[in-house]
Length: 84
Image (tube, rainbow, N blue to C red):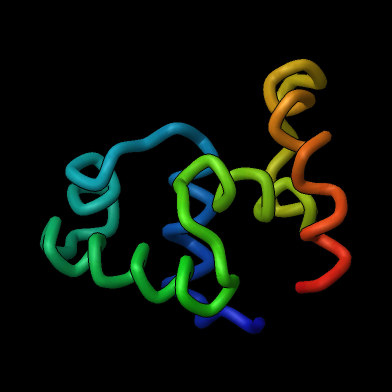
């Protein structure tokens, strides 16, 4: 499912390991707003965790983590990624 620009920006920052409070400070929005955006991302993509947000950001080519950083998580997600 397509994300808004703000949702994509938050997804990328999550994938880079930032916490909600750090994202809020960086984007000049409230921590609560970040939480709402994270919820919408999870809802749109039908996922349940921040790790999955990072995996999806990697899948879409929005980030380029070290090769070993997400290998274990990605192995379990390969089937799910084809259904997004």
